[in-house]
Every structure is written in C-alpha cells, then in structure tokens.
Image (cartoon, rainbow, N blue to C red; front, side, top):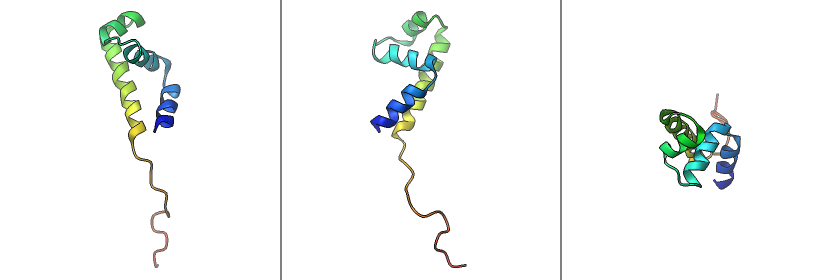
Amino acid sequence: MAARADYIVTSMPAPLRAALELAYFDRRDYRQTAAELGVTEDEARRRLRLGLQLLSTARAPLPEAGPPPGYGRAL
C-alpha cells in the first residue's frame, strides 16, 4: 500500500502535490495553503480534496488474480 501511495503522489499533477505537501508536511490549513500558492481559498480546497481522493485509492483492494470470468464453464 505504501508503494501505491508513493506512486500516486509522485504521478499526481504538481499543483495537487504542492497543496498536499503544504497541508501535510508544513501543517498549513487551506487558507494558508491558498496564500502560499497564490490561489483562491476555493482553489486550495479543491486541490486538497482532489489530492486526498487520489490518495484514498491507494487503500483500495487489488483485484483478485484468478481465472477470467466464464473460464471453465461448460458450453
């Protein structure tokens, strides 16, 4: 899961990553993040929300490996 989260963070667009880094590592709220990035508060909230949504996919279970649907069925 950590490797998936790392991949997601490194592959997300730079504006989303910058907002998340300010909020998480520098403990900035969305108002402070907006001021540092030079964007509106709404835009900072949007970037944080989208970034967190992308990160939440790292927790999604991996698809089970198995035979394809219908494999082994009698015709």
